[in-house]
Length: 71
Image (tube, rainbow, N blue to C red; front, side):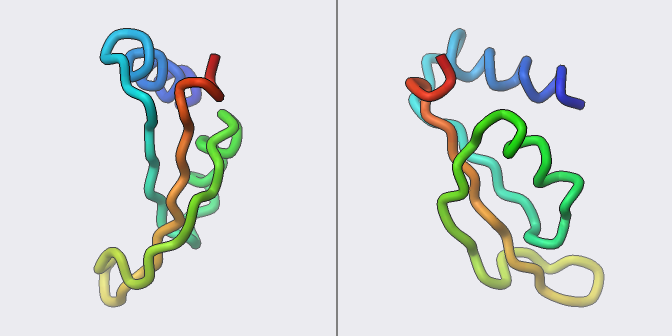
């Protein structure tokens, strides 16, 4: 998964010329939160009740990475 995540980041910054990439993850989804943290994404905030999941709403944490931070 890390290799695929890095490929997407490389593509976004190098091929598409993006300035920023954001990742939204359910706050309690610890396995998914590891990836952006491993790639030095910064936690930028939280969205309350951002997604209906199964039978309840879950909050999301927002991670961001700027092109200048990735290089």
